[in-house]
Length: 495
Ligand code: HEC
Image (cartoon, rainbow, N blue to C red; front, side, top):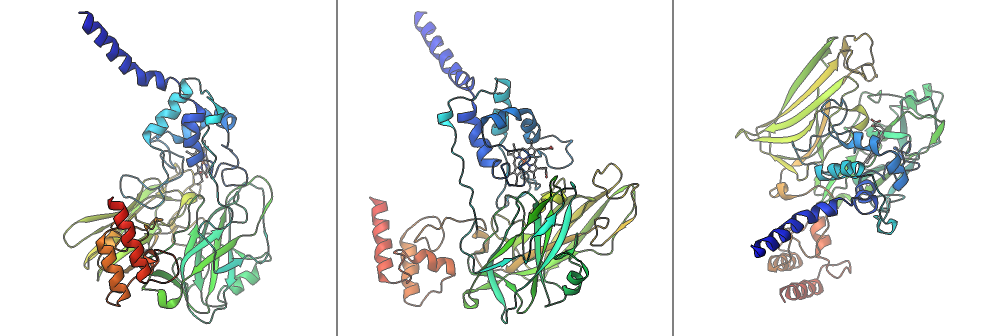
């Protein structure tokens, strides 16, 4: 009997151990990592979320109920479920690069922290504020384009859309691995899209407008242009193509950058820059191509929710690398997937609550292989009723394709490359290159040694990434010294 009482006491104390730990939820140890890692990047001075800085205990404490409301999922929210952090794609539908989300444990911890008194805890134990990069987030650009003059943004609390022309004046096609927009004013720049147009074709639009640039909303006001070449959304890093992939700006063409300035309450200025990371043409293995699913023929009746479902046949093997669903203010949802000839469904993206403010380029976690004969399906819904708070028309009106705020779009550029074997294993997000892992299987072994030797003997061709990862001693060339180095590393791993 005595024995079992002791056992029981032990069991009770073991059970109550986690409870007593939970009773001490505090800002420094439990909450600051959640906020600083997921929110502070935007919610601090000079950034898009500056209206609500979240940089210390008292700011988070004073806004705890507001934060709880924004991070807690709720089916009734029109935009974002949850609202923060902003990430419109459905996380269960597909996996995309750079997903922003809090786990359900983190959300629960935040609520429990509030109900237990929202204590600060020991300030010494607070999570260190991350280093937010100043300047380029990816490196030293080869071309930097700066706006010719600052643009004035009025503090009238309204959205403002403007296009700016950048004359590249290049005699040759420019291949690039990344195009990065560096907002001059992070608080005002909400999103940016970039295309190229034949030289001078937008100059008249610029000349007609008395300020620098010209006003534009959903389009660029020109007929001939490339597909989207780059863009920006707050809190997202530009994607940098690797594995010899590159995008192209045709020789001589001008870039047009369309800026969406968010509503601000004070007059401000913006002088933004575009960084271009070029690639030498002979290092380009595959040029990224695009196809655009587009439907300029629709008519959206007033007081109705309409659905447009378009399909695109894929005649040869491709690997999908990016997509950009785009509609305007009636936009309600998007779903994009492919069906292969074997009836496999390959999900691209699903946005349950389309939000014009948070549109972006999306990249699948791995290249998506679509065999020849696949069909891409794109389904967009439009809410042209008066219960859509963003409906630009009151009462609702017939709405058609166009560039203006009162027009709509069904526009889906998709970037792809012709398929090569193994593409489905190529991850598109930021990769930590494991030096020596030239077949990218996640480990160093004799296969990598064979690959490197074959490359040195000219038996094997390498992609740019493979060359980079073979240069074990970082001396700029691949030779026997690298082979010695990798063998030494493999032997030391085995000990
Ligand atoms: C990418 C930038 C960004 C990130 C990351 C971000 N926010 Fe926001 N947040 C904004 C902007 C911009 C707004 C203004 C509303 C809008 O445009 O959606 C906002 C709005 C809010 C609001 C007000 C919501 C409302 O409906 O009034 C709260 C609260 C908030 N954010 C908290 C957070 C928290 C907590 C996190 C981290 C979990 C976070 N935000 C992450 C940019 C961001």
